[in-house]
Length: 280
Ligand code: NDP
View 1 (cartoon, rainbow, N blue to C red):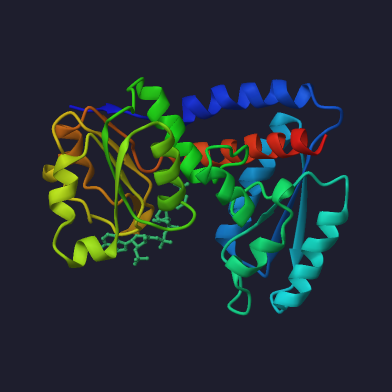
View 2: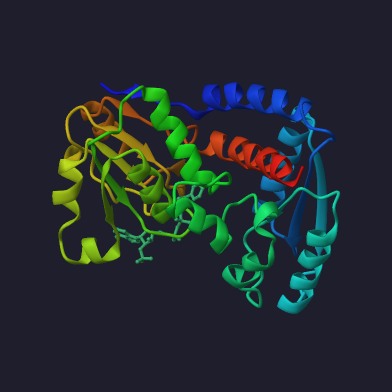
């Protein structure tokens, strides 16, 4: 029976470290958060970020722009925040209205203020193993793995999902630790090869967004299972991995909710402090 790998206690430790780093800065760091239009999910996420920021001694500036804001207007707004020396980092709340392409606008945030780690310059640093600012969800997964105490050197790690925000940055971070990494995606599933890869994984990380995609009985005995997926099924939040059957086989498993989620905001704040240090 797997041990639960919970995010909250790790997040608490990291927040303590962040508090100390904030105290060591010349001035209170400032995080600018931009939401375009009304969205209950985005507002809830922004509220939870504000709470964490307040707790850590970080100033949280919230900017709500009208739903009809054009891409050019948003870029203009970002550039104003880029030029504002009092702002250390920026986050754009998702989802965005249809007229705005996140991939385009995220490139306008100065790399040193890009606390989501999505600017090509920051992704490039990740390739060279020199990133100070790492995409938050990928960083959260690495913290969970660290908590198990398992040495990643030479381990068979299978990542399912190859998005820019989770799967791909994770592959780079894992390679940095000399894990043997396989990244599975829709092509793997369509070729009927997903099950074969999962069965070989010492460490299985799933970030897809499809409830029940990973059958628990496929998990290798003694594996570490990190489930990034968030799915709403019958008013319950579940991951991508069948929890009970996977828990019966694995050595460690993250609960959903309560695994990766609680760590992502802490990672965002850690990135902000790193950004503030780079700017000082
Ligand atoms: P994306 O939709 O951007 O990426 C999903 C990935 O899964 C893609 O690479 C896609 O491949 C792949 N995929 C889709 N179907 C299959 C399949 N049948 N077999 C194998 N691979 C498949 O999602 P994100 O990366 O943004 O997020 C993934 C999940 O993680 C979501 O549930 C999201 O809500 C959650 N999440 C949780 C966070 C947290 O804090 N806990 C933070 C961020 C995300 P292709 O593109 O080729 O179709």
